[in-house]
Image (cartoon, rainbow, N blue to C red; front, side, top):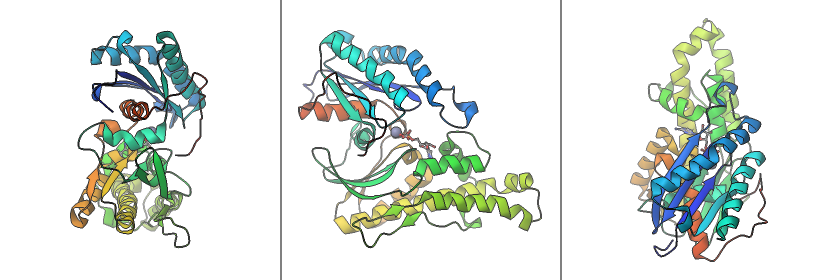
Length: 347
Ligand code: KG4
Ligand code: ZN
């Protein structure tokens, strides 16, 4: 984290984005993301295609990140890399590239947990939260509310019991005949829809027995959308396609509203229960404009401080891996070259 640290080159390849970034002089010097277009026709990420695309893209992406930072490879002081969770084949491409560079240059390797990377994405830009802070991680694979203390200590306050928030956005988008990834499509469409036209259940489960402030079930919300789309056309005496055409934006708005209210409601309760006033929302779904607006409104009304990464650091990127590695390196945490990929691991 200190300006005296030599530059860190970070690599992220856990899913379908091939990304590299350079952190130098205590700030972000470059961040490059090569999004893979090969999955678009498949309705989701195809693991085999993802690892092959990473193979093609990884070296050019790393080179571009170094060039844009104006940092020659010889000046890099450490290599950071995501080791999990993610797709095994995808992780191995990034991990092998990082090990090769660390071995060749004779410099330290720093393994970063992808979820921890999302959490620390709020440190890429100023102002950043003070420890301890509450962090809601909402991505394609995870929905998790934690209390983050200094030194990488994460206390879990709630999580999803089934689908992740981003997964629900993607599945609902599919039900509405929209492309993949679905979150940005729903976001755009919801802007012109009326959320009050459909009553959908809250994905929030308040767990009174456990210490959880909030658990979520996004699968129930998604199923409610499925039934609405299946049953409403007949009730309205319309052909399914025509009904969907006329109601797509309203369904998207109602779904986005239900998801945002639940997530922000859990944050508000967590602030009340813990007394912690610094709150972060990170991960791909934190790019959602409905969620951003609902969180801003609640933080203004309730007096807590909201931190969200810039949009390009909400979705997968290597800048968040670089800044996390800067913290780790400053704390003396490095890894040896036996570091293995861990496709599924908890925060
Ligand atoms: O963090 P991320 O890029 O990758 C994972 O670690 O999973 O998150 C990807 C997820 C996808 O489910 C995508 O649909 C969702 O983030 N997403 C959004 C938006 N942009 C991306 N969801 C809602 N609104 C958005 N604007
Ligand atoms: Zn991610």
